[in-house]
Length: 260
Image (cartoon, rainbow, N blue to C red; front, side, top):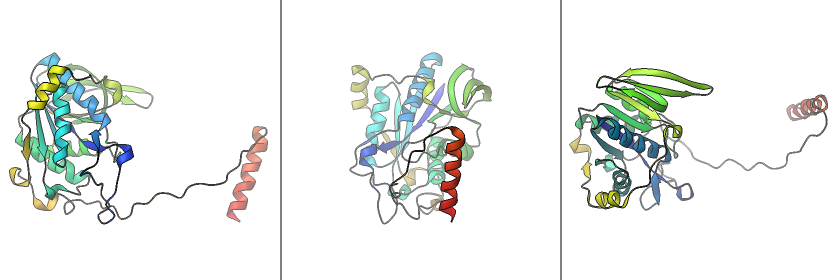
């Protein structure tokens, strides 16, 4: 089984900085980690390789420092790493990002399965995985909590819902986004870390991929961040006491006073 896992290197929550001119995250020189949900995607890819054979290729788009994320994934058992890196990709929204990643994945064809974390901790949109499947015109199953069975042509998975789960069978190739309930990421072994340290990372820029320049970076991003600000801190407030009918009456009076 040829598995591709798409990951993202994100800033640690204490290291988030915004460029005031472009309203985009400053990534260069910022301490970063693999997006937590992507750790489960890496682990699931390695587990599927162990069950069915094949290889796991990790793909990420980002600055040169994202090389470290690929090496960490290799230390966990992945086979290869591809860094999609070019200043032309800077400022991409989720649509431009998924378009660019799909271009890299096309260059890696054929593949059987793409796995992504359900969302990134810095954007929380959960749009890149589904966007990739749209650009590649393949089926997608989101919020996967378990892979039950797989053959050369299909896969059966459990998809998490708010109150339970549903079982879905999808033809392959397909894309899955996974939740943290699917597994427990392993700790890299010493052998894995040594292999990752010496691994050759493939780097592709705009010229290496068959991409429309109008669809990448800020130019190819339909959504733009107009303004970023910290909400005003709430002050005051009061605790209402008494029985439920009495509290309800107090709430009504407070709302009336706010309106008036």
